[in-house]
Image 1 (cartoon, one colour):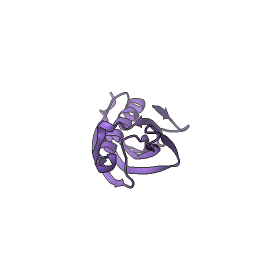
Image 2 (tube, helix red, strand yellow):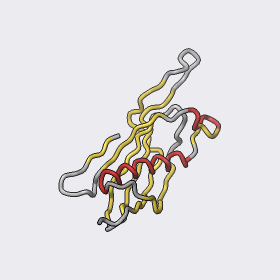
Image 3 (cartoon, one colour):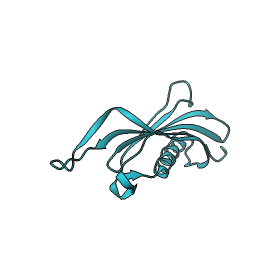
Image 4 (cartoon, helix red, strand yellow):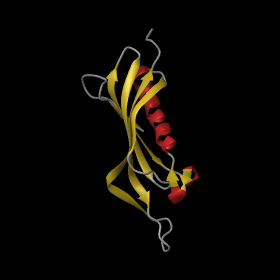
Length: 136
């Protein structure tokens, strides 16, 4: 987990997580993972963003423009980012992205084989709004 703040303001702050997608999350044929998995990951990076910026976990209010662009599969390594796009008094609008940076590539001779994807595959994007408590 990492968080970086740009100099000169909070807008543009980025939080990044990386995760291995376990086979227990495979939901469909071909070891596909359901789209809700990505949305849950967005909630995790949004929570860290709110803690980093506001000292509170915040509450997700809404998503807009969710795009499922490529499959996420069990055995993938995904990188999830939240970027603070706009900040209101209590609202925080964030842009989210899930990128597949590694993928299992098993064969009969090497069942645990995997590869790094260069470039990564953008799997899911979204914009979401989180609210935080008023500042004292």
